[in-house]
Image (cartoon, rainbow, N blue to C red; front, side, top):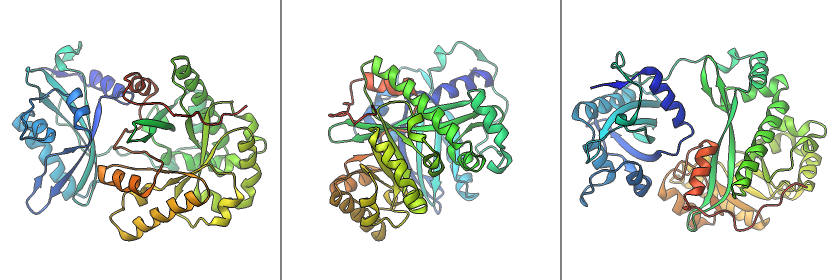
Length: 409
């Protein structure tokens, strides 16, 4: 059998970053029995649409997926996870074949995060092998499941960052916030990524501290706002008026006249709770200037610090976003109580409350019952490319905001 060449596979995986052909799952590994449980699919209907499999009523989609994987590859996947848990790896990447009822072969690219015996992952369905034009000889050797050894962020320099901006190596990915009962999108958060020529795709944790230390955070923030603005105009031309949420650093806010340099888009700006507590009054004038321009302001990562009523009364905030560390520990009484307190605090100040990092239906149900306005997380979508988001909107499965957010004049 022919396999995709390494070059062709790289191209397809690159497309995967901007595709919606993926679905999330959870699973469990029993270390004592050395057994990997079948995956529990977050959205079986979506999974069925992406991957047509036989549909016996007595089997879940996860069981049917594994049944469609050749036995030797199913065992290899089991071994990969077993080795990962034994060596205490945090991440697994593996690729395997799946054959549907008509005999067509799909590549499934799996990415998973491991925590104790729990697994949270994504299955991405690559194009059907028979339809891929550039088939070549089998790729040499097994696929490595260990993360690549990358340079530490301290090995990146300000010159690297500056060159990355000049050479347009940065891109944006988008994750929507949702009112699940109505399937209504309330906003879309933009995330910055760096396509480093040597290290591959870098996430913000790898370079944002360097940007702040080097003074390039303002240039990076302005690039992000301008890029988001242009993308927003493209969506508007297609009939989709979507409020975009952009993260903003304390040092950006402290720059003189920062708000006047921003394009007049339909934006929300988010700063973290710790940033507000750290800089306090020094940020107040900048936040008021943003608010006067019509930009709603949200407080992100709420629950990691010690926000008070007095602090909320001093700043022009429109919404709170509960920290994902609390959302993912709702089964811990202390975290659940803190979430309840944040929601009550938001209500007392007339603020909307969004929860970040939602990954299970149980978390979603608990947060909605507690009074959250909207939810965001891998349960609904991982960050995806602009074209993929527009494709998702074009599908008609989601509604746009009932009322547009205030926008800058």
